Image (cartoon, rainbow, N blue to C red; front, side, top):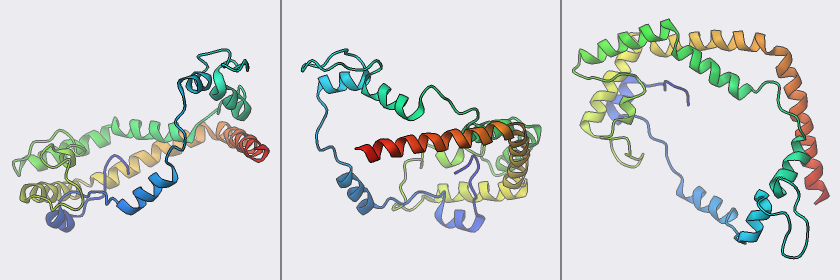
Length: 204
């Protein structure tokens, strides 16, 4: 999911804003598979977090606790010279402050106002408190469907989504070019972390 979702006019008029479908069976299966077999004791949590230097049986707890020791075994002192996730976040931030996006949003706002709707941003209507908590199993209200349809029409009219995609893609290309060498190094470093983690798992 990105800043602006795809919103079809006909679908919006019929169903309102999209809502994620929850698979109760999958959730139940996941919870069963990942249920805690043994809740950690206070002593165990202190050892994990490094809040104690010695266990009750006399065993020495490493500096930083068990979690710190595990991090050192996997990552060592290294950090990624560039993180693709952060670059994606930066490109999104740059796009949202770009004058072309601001202009498109202003036009969208004007379009919405022509139908008597006052929203500051295209991100807001789907999260209107009147229907924000509606789940996929509950039908959208008439007003939600009306707002969603107008929203979709205005997004299309001002070419909001395509403008955003174009602007963001431009920033992504710039960042990738700037960080090319660092990303290559990060790829190698990440592969080393994975190898370390696999070795720990294999050792039991």
